[in-house]
Image (cartoon, rainbow, N blue to C red; front, side, top):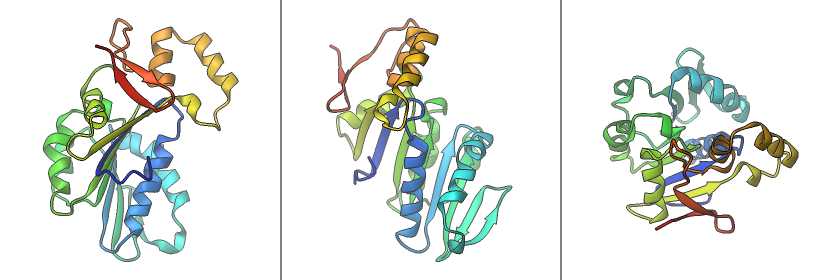
Length: 217
């Protein structure tokens, strides 16, 4: 996923797969690739961004690269006029305005669809910026639609899907224990990255060798 040069990349993965680590590495790498960059990480809420990514981000960036850090606004200014900021999508209109070199939308399935379509996408126009969408499925919604768009390789989109068990650092025994404790639908959704409807029906068929979705017709 990290090596994919497609402009808009969608990663659907089970819980604890390592989505946020990947996203922050991409964010930092882009920020340091040139001067005068603006890079944003957006989750469904400001508080969620703080809990999930702020500490991790600080640990990943060498202190000598940080010029200024705002703990309240969750923003960092790095040498070379580079900005990395964490945002929340609960008040989507507050995101309008800035041009972005890269944006990460974490748990996009829990955001309103207009966050991308009406607000963030236009902010990538003058910079020709990139976007990385990451998350665990939440039924057949706009995240699912975007994922299928990436599977079809439409309009500079590409997409991937991985189960939690694809992370070699996660204990197989722990996954089996979770499987015993959760109902079948929740396990498939949270650990196998399966798009489920509310009745527990599976929309796609997962190809474990290629890590892509094969729609059932």
